[in-house]
Each structure stands twice: as structure tokens, then as C-alpha cells.
Image (tube, rainbow, N blue to C red; front, top):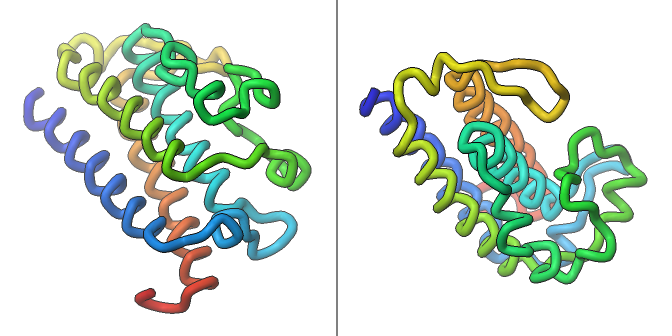
Length: 175
């Protein structure tokens, strides 16, 4: 079990390091740039990734309030009047992306770190039986604990790839 937890934590740390590298040096216009009107932008992806990890690990696996709600991150990001606490960006279309309120990337990275600390605490304290347990996802469907952890790694790495692609379109290769 400890090796399994270490591998999950290693994956989480690897994509967070790569995320910060991909965000380095981008300005607000680049963070909000979309390759097409039907595409995500980087700021949305970062917010969504942090919210997804917070929901899956802290709320669903950990049985806790999300760090987003607990530590009032919508208020800290000055978007509390625009977004419901349960909104984490699932299924967003072009209207939703374009209407997403402006967020400060440095504050958003602080939220990511805050929820990550809590997520790691949840993972470290998981027991074998927690991985086999059925958890109800936000859609009502039941998923096993091991599926949730694997899913988080896959979803987050897919979104990280989108961010790297957008950055590459803006800055060019290796920039």
C-alpha cells in the first residue's frame, strides 16, 4: 500500500512541477488566449485542474469539505459573486469559458498548493479498504477509490498536455 501511495504522490508532484514550468513567464493575455473559440484557455484549465483534484480527493475520497469552500478561495480570488461553490468547470463550453471571471494566476497557484496539501494528507491516510470502497461521484455514479486516484492522474495529465500545447502555440517550442 505504501508503494502505491508513493507512486500516486509522485505522479501528482510530477505534473504540478510541469504545470508551474508551463505557466512560467505567461502574462494574463497569454493565460486567457484560446487557439479557437471552441478551445479551453490556460487560466480555465488551471482553475479546473485544482478544483477537480480538490473535489475528487478531498471531498469524495476524504469525505471533507473542499478546500475551495473551507478556505473561501472564491472570495480570495474575488470571483465569489460569479461562481457557485459547487462549480468546478465540468462540461464548460465556449460561453462558459469566455464568461469565466478574471483570476490572478499567483492566487490561483496558492489555491492549488492549499488543496494539494490537503489532498496529500488524504492520500497518506488511506487504508487498503479505502481503495476498494465505493464512492459516489458528483454525478451519482459509484467508483472505487483506486479508480478515483488513477482518474485524477489521467485527467490532470491530459489537461497539462493541453496547457503545454497552448503555451507552445504562443511561445514556440522549448520556450
